[in-house]
Image (cartoon, rainbow, N blue to C red; front, top):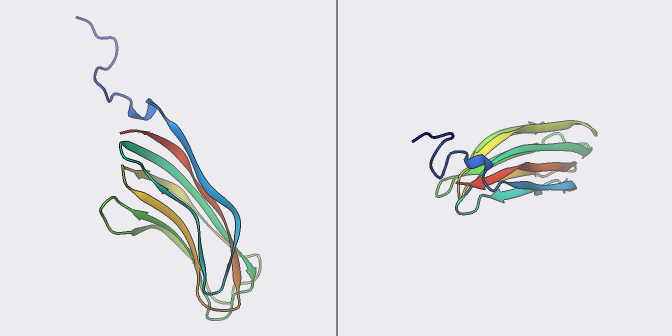
Length: 140
């Protein structure tokens, strides 16, 4: 017998029933002592995902001298503890218009979660958050 292609049920899993994922937000304002997320995605049972994240924070009211703005991409594996995939921040006294951007790719198995989060410590400054997650979800 001749086989003209791979055999089995999982030869090209990324090509079987792909679903486009787009989770994100327009600009969200975050004041001192607050936080906001640019999107949360959890891979459903029986599915995997490859997602690109691209989030950006922009200072809209100058940060106070001791105030920090932290931008984080957090990954929580199914049944595991949350870990940081990427992190960046702006120090105290950052001026209006200063930006910080994070981008990259994460792979998720069923039950895994990824979140983009902006947190500002207490102070008079404020920042905007924009961006999100985009990619493909497929059968596992």
